[in-house]
Image 1 (cartoon, rainbow, N blue to C red):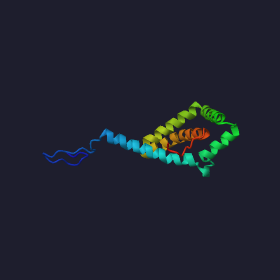
Image 2 (cartoon, rainbow, N blue to C red; image 1 turned 30 degrees about the vertical axis):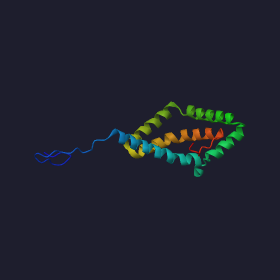
Image 3 (cartoon, rainbow, N blue to C red; image 1 turned 45 degrees about the vertical axis):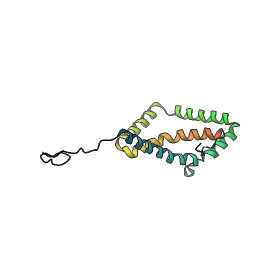
Image 4 (cartoon, rainbow, N blue to C red; image 1 turned 45 degrees about the horizontal axis):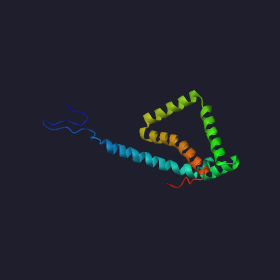
Length: 143
């Protein structure tokens, strides 16, 4: 009788459909993919998205420090804004967002995973870069 691998001749050993996967290689590929994604997201984090009115992080940080008088006050205002936005989205909105993320991941695993990670990583990297710039660090310096 035939199987997914095709018909089997008498005495012939059937090869598995998928080769044995080495966990170290799989982990390395996942790590490389995530690193590539973070680097792709980092460009719009640092350079901004002018077409959407999102300023480069350095300019936004300097503007915020000037507006609030000190780096500490600017960071405090940034955190208050982030907390207010988080509290503003109600439980039902968070539930719908989580379900949407899971559906995209389930039905579009490659594209969905990238989209989900981008959606998740961008705001966190943006906040980290803003705080670094507000405190006088160069967010574009890898050190």
